[in-house]
Length: 279
Image (tube, rainbow, N blue to C red; front, side):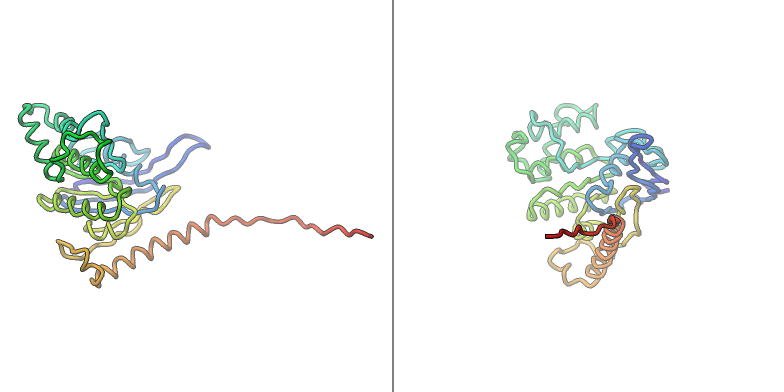
């Protein structure tokens, strides 16, 4: 039995002539402990797919199964790291994380909550900022709070919706390493949504492209056969990395060419002849 399974998923917004077919015929299985990346163009339906998996949306057709049971709503078993941080601005770093801990562990004492919050804030190296509010933090620090909050709920699966897309290259690289270090400790099942092929190759066990909509669907999978832990500086000289990266980019470029061809509009010009003027 797959840990997560998407069976013939389709998602339509609106009705009748206003209907927008975002996703169609989505089939995916993820095994326990796997790290899978879905890569695609902006606007291809990646966030809709995430929201179907975490229970914020219901599919129009098909079903999402988590550990063999239909997903009927949100659950702390599936921790989500959002692209936009989603922190409450009036709460401090510690309070934002504590709110999630209270939801996941309602029977915890105050001391147990504080201990868990302190551990996970320290895990993302934010202990000196534990009493600061989001507006006092950089973008990278806010995203680390989001990571700590998701992991503090002890999710069985981590879902990441382009969590590092808005960060500068250095911060992005550091957070990639932090997420991988956390993941490697107990190999929780992970799903990364990204538009960065290099990020997917560095972090995941396999990459699956999402073909753009309307009626977006998944393309063929690409297995990342590179030993862990992976060294970023050594990847550029790794033949398997080069081969996999080229194959994925070639596939995505092919999709892009298809879109351009479909978007071309041919206009028929009327038959006109210029007027002649006699001086």
